[in-house]
Image 1 (cartoon, helix red, strand yellow):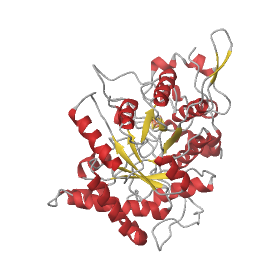
Image 2 (cartoon, protein in one colour; image 1 turned 180 degrees about the vertical axis):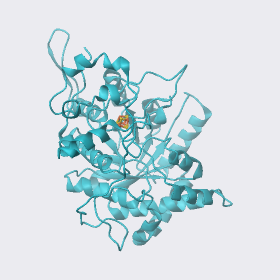
Image 3 (cartoon, protein in one colour; image 1 turned 90 degrees about the vertical axis):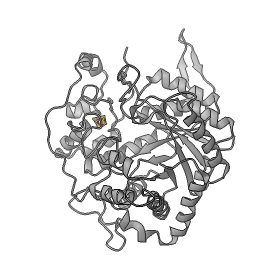
Length: 449
Ligand code: SF4
């Protein structure tokens, strides 16, 4: 099957992916209706791939492999999201084999949102692997996985054919979170990520900052900007910190509320903003856009892309309307007073979104019992050894290779009353001038033997 998405990125063409979320159920009318719309969007030739989300926001749903396979049978090129949140490493390996059997090449490897709800209660979280380890597994499958058979024999599998990518969140407003997102992106690329899709966000300068930081740090994979067509309802949910890693400030929420009061409920304004975001992303040098938050309707997609083309030549004019970072946000680069974007000057004194000290974290007593056996596995180069911080106990997602993308203003996605353990680690190491050591952390999966 042709891979228009991968071919487009490799050739330097500006690509467009289109998001779908199949949600709960197997044969729901809404799922079929969405699928019909996605096929039409694909056949219109306006997009290079349809992405299939993997149970976002910690809610159960149809497996992305199943929905993507169904779309692939109709000729649609897909990018399947694959998250670590509900599966241990063996289940993830099995999932990758299913993708390969279904001919699905484009995979977005992510840690995933913490589970929030499920049949008969909240499920036991998995997080056996993190996104870096999942990328490593995928890369090894692509090379033909080598392993020891039951009698110690050397075995090697047929190589798979994945074009694997990752996510990155440029919209972090403290120094610690910004730098650790960058370092984690670098680790993901070293683990085999070939492209990255950005988290949802609404600040042109922050978005450009991650692109510049990536390039200056030798990260040369294509970065794809996220263009979520936002209206008041979802904007309010993001504003309230209920969608992991997404930030909407008071000012932006006010604008969305005013737009919602218009005759069309804010539809035209949200589409116009999305078109300008596409023009800005292209102007800033992103390799493409990931379009989300609109119905699977070719007419709507065509309208946005057509408007975006009209805005391309004057993209910098729209930057002032897409600056919704907190006033005291950390910015690595100085501001270019002409454009409102970044200048190449780095301020001598960083300023940083304040992350106050809070009470001790909620702990996980069951995991504490495992500490002796885990303690034997940690290397010198780990936050366990350098900071005496134990993600297996204190990070709900057990992230041992840098934080997940879900922190909110320095606080944990899962327990917002707790600081993110990695923000604490950064602060502790910063006091010793050793915070750059986090970039070198490379922890393999734990052995639960
Ligand atoms: S402690 Fe940090 S890395 Fe762990 S789940 Fe919370 S926000 Fe994510």
